Image (cartoon, rainbow, N blue to C red; front, side, top):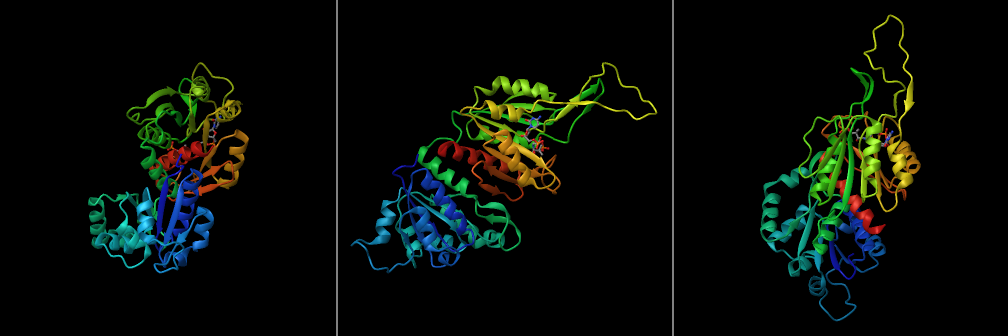
Amino acid sequence: MLKGKRILLGVSGGIAAYKSVEIVSRLRKLGADINVVMTQSATKFVTPLTFRSISAGPVYTQMFDEPKSWNIKHIVLAEQADVVLVAPATANILAKMALGIADDFLSTVLLAARSPIYVAPAMNHAMYHHPATQKNLKILRERGVALIGPANGFQACGTEGDGRMSEPVQIAEELVQFFTGKQLMEGQKVLVTAGGTREPLDPVRYIGNFSSGKMGYAVARAFHEAGAEVTLVSASVDLPVPAGVQAIKVLTAEEMYHEVMKAFDGQDIVVKAAAVADYRPAVFQGQKIKKKSQNLNLELTPNPDILLSLGQKKKHQILVGFAAETHDAVGNGMEKMRKKNADILVVNDVTVPGAGFGTDTNIVSFLFLDGRRIDLPMMSKLDVARELVKEIAFLKKVK
Ligand code: PMT
């Protein structure tokens, strides 16, 4: 997808430099040629050798290295790049860019560059909100420099707030979008399930769970934002259907099973965020069950496992499950992913404050079949959903 595209990556000195190794890895998998320029401070966090090994290309750190060919390296690098990315972009490099200071290799390349420049700021939240940094960012924006992030969340200094570098997948996808000019999910048909199923016992009672549908609705919205055609199969949710999304309302796990199976063949991606009841009452009592003084025993019978059935049936589809866990979230999630043949499993420990049922935020890990795992900090359910969309887009490209 990025074959023949030349990307110049500038790495400045912040702890997020280690994440830039993953950006290089992702872009290389898509075929890009990557040159890396590191500041001296950046080399204290990650060695040039690490970037050289991952990029399979040269890594520049010194202005006055012995030239390997007779050209002025910083000018050539600046001229050759189709796009320049600075990640992490510290407050210091942003200030130098804004003022046109060229006192090391990276700042000199940036001053000479005529191709589009993306920066992914990464710094402590007080530094990010400082008027000097905000002014520098404003100058850069007005000059046409594109900003990626920063994100909000846990910071290396132990605090929380704005200033965290965006996740590598998000940064890589911004560049893919720059080169392809396409929305991430253009032409993709996506089925999302949301909410909690209800299993009636009698005309007035049911067995249910605490799902509000917020997570699934955020997933549907994020896919629609990314240009997909989205169908949402929704159980017992009291939320407005996101604009542009087609919703099918269901009550029980069996109804959800039938709607999902009916639509499955025509889909490219299925995300099962719904909390589906594993059991339903063996018998539905046509009349309200009368109160008695003795114990009441209920017989339950298993519901179909929708995700498992989809995993057995899938052909080209990417299948994503969620797992609501209360202990050993990752271990249990891995087992579920393998058993149900999902491509990605999103696990949330629903006992942790700020995660799981009913909240506006979630704390999740993405598990992948190849053993990879990405732990996200607490973020809004919509941001979790946007991260998921980018991971799926990446998986589709490398699959
Ligand atoms: O709706 P919110 O209030 O925003 O809360 C979000 C959430 C906690 C519901 C969501 O983040 C979540 O974890 N959803 C999955 C809940 C769940 O049912 O987990 P599970 O571990 O029981 O199931 C694993 C997967 O199998 C899920 O994708 C589930 O949809 C699927 N499943 C389960 C049982 C079944 N009979 N059929 C299924 O398809």
